[in-house]
Length: 205
Length: 132
Image (cartoon, rainbow over all chains, first blue to last red; front, side, top):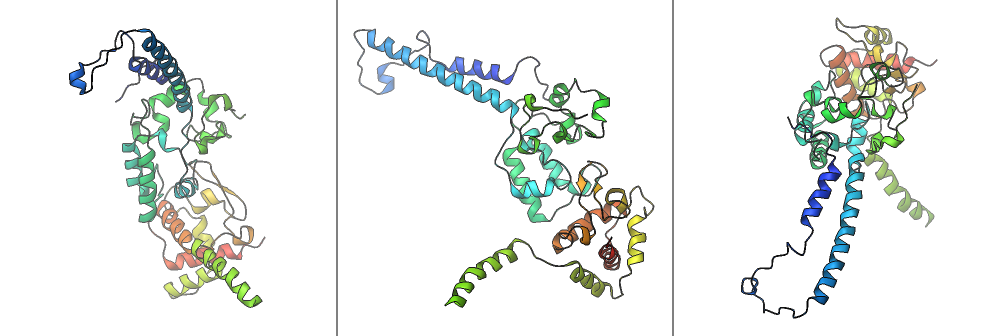
């Protein structure tokens, strides 16, 4: 099990990594000129170098902020360029769950057992199975929480899924308009496109 | 000249539509299954087959309703299923590979084996007979 560390969102970890990577004047240790294989030219005055260092720091900080907003966005969205076969075949019975919601090993087991797919025969011809399987492998979840292989390879049994939905009561799940936790699009209108932004959630009556 | 123009424009379109999907009709598929089984199709037997549970948990009508001129609902996912009767859904049974794919899956789920050509002929001829 890859237990997620609670209260340590991915963006914070990302920020820490970026900050560690930032060059700090006191940390910048240059190897000896001979090791660098370049001609030595130590600047006699520190002025221009510390100016350029400030500029570098500023642009790196901007880059860090951009990366940070990217990470925050990635946590909510699982959008990837769609695959027509995946969309067509999977969505004939349910939401074509975005590949990032399960790790590669889970997708591999699911595609290897389509003839017994959560209680029904969902078998496909060999070419379609291979195409969809390869696409799922290429886009499978790799972030901290999606590395977890949930029990029975059910997305809804993932620790992160249970945590994210802990405020939804059993009675709500059982509403005719929802049915079960597998019916993402009942509340997440953009589910099929990989959009699970919680600000867009509308729980039907 | 105009004939040539027509040919140049129409030929690629015709090829395109052939390539996208092998088009067929319910009647053609019934004829195919009848030829395979070597006996005539019986719509009444098809209806009986459709609504029976075959000693297991589900019948075809569990998801498709007992008279599939209307929408059905997937028993486990709740997904809406368009009507099966071609008179109420012209797209039904126009793609032979799709017909075979769903017969293979659903006969396995409902009956626990693949359906015979005779059973498929009966089922299709009953569905095609539903006009109102």
